[in-house]
Image (cartoon, rainbow, N blue to C red):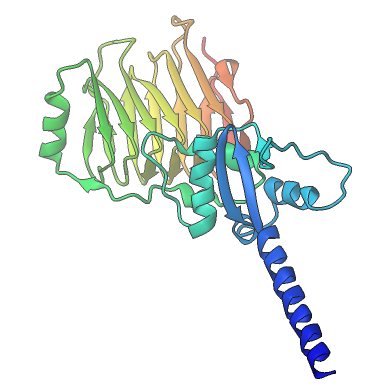
Length: 296
């Protein structure tokens, strides 16, 4: 009797271990994102709440009317860019962003929206260390460029004075807090431009003349931008603008002139532009005054 009792206890222990192992394996998730394979845990995928992937996982583990596509190895397949997903998965593991410099915030936001993963726009304000340079160093950097376009990246340009007589400049991941730009370029140069990508503006003041401007994936707060007649375009794409004053003047003799503010958010601001040439596609205006300027 004693022997039989011990044998039953051993069987119970084995069953408990088997159940525990089964639960552990069921918490491991195998994903194939556009051909790139990942293994992670359900708890990691739930770190920002329910999303598209967690729903696919739950549906794959029970009878569901929704089909879940799997590859030949049983990985849940999603036809999406695996490189971008790797960045997002790392974020779900650590809740800290580590975004490579060659990837724009708008790409990551687009992927987050696809996967229905919640995020706060404030998370995408520049958080990488920026090198601080002096006015002299900035002027030297611009003047020393041998190309007709200067590229400036990951710099703290706070309180720098920007001259609109400067050549074409493309800025990436720069902080323009308290920066002033005064209009000196009173001669028309139709192809002259400043492009800003993933830049931050706070209490900045841009007074420009004959300058084409592009703001992409930028954040602006308490900023004034006045772009006077003569530019071909002023464009805002995927920007967030708060408590700012944006005034754009077209030139009636330049029929190529256009203004765009696309997929952006404008809050508590003034936006003044020739509305006949303004593309507002996908932009949300909140407590914002949009003034219509009619050209003769």
